[in-house]
Image 1: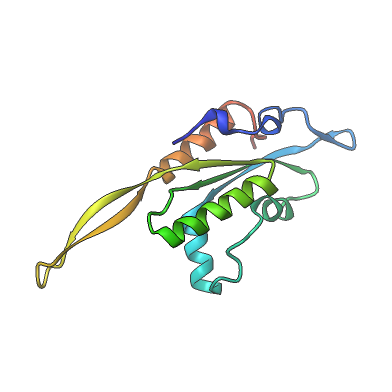
Image 2 (image 1 turned 30 degrees about the horizontal axis):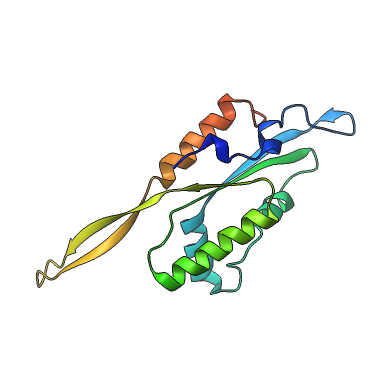
Amino acid sequence: MLSLAGLSPGYLNAPGLSRGGTVAVRVATYIDGFNLYNGLKEKHGRKYLWLDLQSLAASLLLPDQKLVGVSYFSARVHHEASSHRQATYIDALKAACPLLSVVEGRFQEKQLQCRACGHRRVSYEEKETDVSIAVTLVEDAACDRTTQP
C-alpha cells in the first residue's frame, strides 16, 4: 500500500537544496522491483541482484541534480526461500539507503486453465505496483518534492 508516512524526513524537506550557490534540480527515482529483478536475472543471472539502488540512482545524476528520494515498489513473494531472500534484500536496502521508501503491493490468486486438456492450476499476479508508482510520482510533483521541468 502507498504510505505517506514511509517517506524519509530528508525526502519531505527537499525544497531549497543548493550546490555552490545555485539551486539544484531535485530528482526522485521510482523503481518497479519485479521488473528490475526479472530483467537483471534474465540478462545477467544473479550477478547484479544485490544492487544498492540509491548509489545506482545517484551515479546517473548530472552535476546540477540532487537525489531526494528512491521509491522501491514490490509485492512480497509467497515461496518460502524466495520470500526470505526478498526480505533480506529489502532490509539491506533500508539499512544502506537513507532516501529509500518501500511501497508494497500484493499478489492476487488467479485460476488458470489449459485450453487443450482443461487442467487447472493456481497462479499469482502482482497487483497495485503500476498504480502505486503513478500515484507516488504525481504526489511528489504536486507536493513540490521534485523539480518540475
